[in-house]
Image (cartoon, rainbow, N blue to C red; front, side):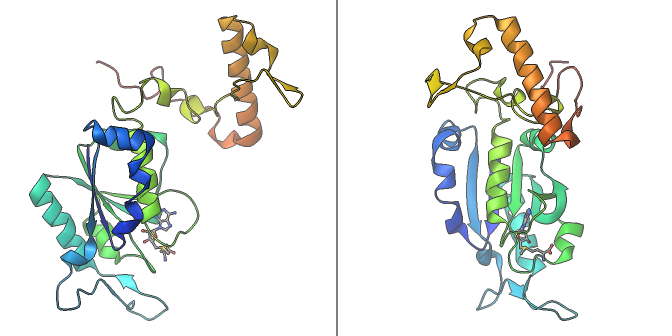
Length: 237
Ligand code: SAM
């Protein structure tokens, strides 16, 4: 998958993409991320990218021209790509949406700043408008990184175990059961006996019950959000 990012602050991206699983995915050629300074697509001596809002009000709004020019230039150079505007007003990112985006060959992420982005970008350019949660951040760069990470986990080959993303929280409308590792007793707190039993059927039953119980307690809103027998896994048919 190819991901192009349009941002006024390219420096924010150095670091998070250079470690662990995302770095390995990039090295293996499974994921290509290229960050572009939006200013290069702005015209005039001062390459202005933002202006005060029409109608008054505080702050600045990002102009549409550099964003349209950036997306159009990237599409000309690298082929059709789905443009994603990061916005607190967008569709909430969840595993189903991350999986849906992982099927795309090319994404172009648009990071807003200041008071946001001229509405014509959402109305006439973006294919998706996506929020990473019901809170407002100072810019779209962290949301873009979150989206890249969430989508990359569903790209074939990125996680060593292809089944792994389908066992995690939110799949089958459940939070994952608690996990334990060595030592067997830590500061007087033992690991649940069933996990040491070697009885896989019992362990599976315990995990299922724990997952249901903690979902009921912590996130009753997601209970039962099942996505059918394959639970979103790709099928051969
Ligand atoms: N005035 C806007 C509003 O109330 O909807 C908020 C603008 S925010 C300060 C600046 C930029 O940060 C947005 O254009 C968007 O790109 C990004 N952003 C902030 N919170 C976000 C979120 N929860 N999800 C995705 N992007 C977000």
